[in-house]
Length: 195
Image (tube, rainbow, N blue to C red):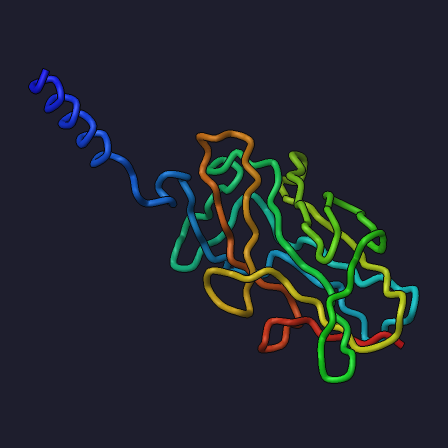
């Protein structure tokens, strides 16, 4: 009986020692930085009450160029993901503070899909014909004032934000891409006014 306990402890310790304590290895996660902005804010010099501020994917092809690499990464083949997600939202200046604007039903979707609340969880859907991940959404601007658009954070810097694969295959690689958008200020926001 004592010998059986030692065999059990030896087997248990072998199993425990062989476990992967690296979460990234366990989940098969990979992080890359895109060389191009994958998201684009459709800039206007003047926004009026009732206008939409549009945001969408640009150059978000399944072949992503990585820094210091000569061969593009095929993210569709790597992840098997038919969608990627990212977060954005709006804040309005009230005196000296920025207040979160609940997007709610003020979001109009042209391509892709989204969930709304205090922010937008945008889903870029893979288009097999164009080999692009596509999203385009507009937020209706209902009140005049100073605004800024914010994005989720990134593993690389404050000015970048992450786009993450939505995987349905548990054996596929989970990919997080650090990217940015046009016309961001040095603090990582897109500032604009509504008249």
